Image 1: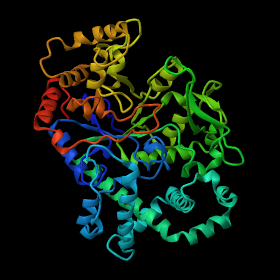
Image 2 (image 1 turned 180 degrees about the vertical axis):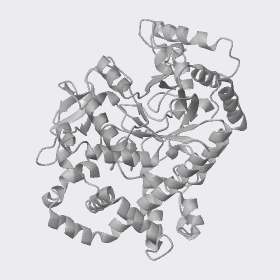
Image 3 (image 1 turned 90 degrees about the vertical axis):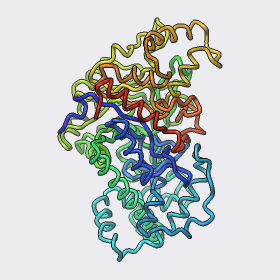
Image 4 (image 1 turned 45 degrees about the horizontal axis):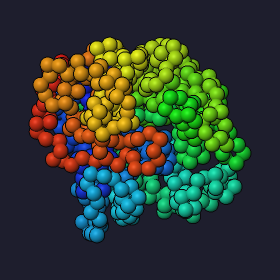
Length: 509
């Protein structure tokens, strides 16, 4: 397998929901193809996205109804129109949404109403019939359960599967057969939407490959409890007889939170996974490799040891660390799938054992520029000390934008201690000496000048957008994942400057 981390390259982090467009949310059609063209113009070799599954609670891509399904909200309407699957009349009365923020609660029902018309028009004897049938057969191992899960869930007022009638909750054969018959039209529509998503994404990925652009995807280590994954394979998780988790995931109390973080995801019964030589995980990773060239695994440290919290706990205070599958999982994945191009998200407090796990399989870790400039007494690696075998970022989806962060630590509109501000500011300022471009361009130049073989920056940082462009604020359950940009915001100057910096730092793709 080609080592995608062996040469200096750079790229941009942008989730497709943030792409510009007229229908309330970014799509994976024409706007995405335009962005690929712009990446080429900017001499970038990577497009990194967030998880692409159908979103559930809080609209977070890290809380999905399935680890295998695509987010059908991203299906491009204009592409459907070109193919005759969507008519102009289908869009009559479609609302005008704020082009710079996604209002998920309003956008989702409007888009689903349009897609319902597309599914009703879809000809099971038409030109796409053979491709649709092949897709359904090829992906049956997850598609059948997912379509049934979503159809039942909708018929039950979107209530969690643990609140369904007992025969459906426990997957009684007769109850499932009756549900398949009663909900056949809805199940078919769900499969059609997944086919249309897969078709459009495959076309986009082929175009990226043609342009020499690698797509980096994202695998959350844990899955949502209210998901087809847990409902379909409950034996792979620690659950009670009623389906609720006996233990859940999170992180312990620390400097940032006295009570820790209670994520609530069910934890894997790793011995059960080992009995199958990690077949479920192998299918999950293979599905991602069908979509991406490289995958980033979120919370990588959880494979070495994870924090286990009682399922009925209200905070993360009374948890404990439990040994994970460690190297055994990745030996199993290697046996089943071969060598894998994985980025290990190794941020936070990382142990020697996690470093050893990452380095045994030669997975590059992550380095974040914003984390490099804490107070002088903090042991943070500055950009000059980034290793070659890593992926370096100005910031991630969980960070403030670089401009927003910089102005905060510089003392503008904040209540942080003057001592802390001075420490951070004093450490970053020397990196800007001699650089004559604007703040945001200089930040990207600093990133691309590091020894890191791979460097990635959010599009917001290239545009110099402040905190209003932040994608996610961890710990705040609402109002996240909404940022979008206007087409005019990615200017000629912005793209040309990016290309110049990339050339100067020897990262031309």
